[in-house]
Length: 58
Image 1 (spheres, one colour):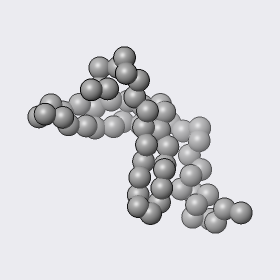
Image 2 (cartoon, helix red, strand yellow):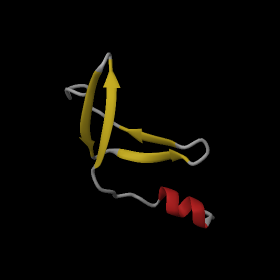
Image 3 (tube, one colour):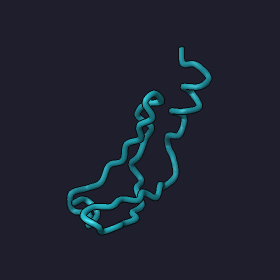
């Protein structure tokens, strides 16, 4: 059975669109992602899926 903390942490599906910021080689970017989820509470990890055909993928 899930604890109350775990249920609150992983209870975001289906969720809203998230805005993700990234920087690579001095270029900053903001992208919206629909495929995202909490991966771990300890350590805190959050995952997003970005398609290879998207301009933000590289």
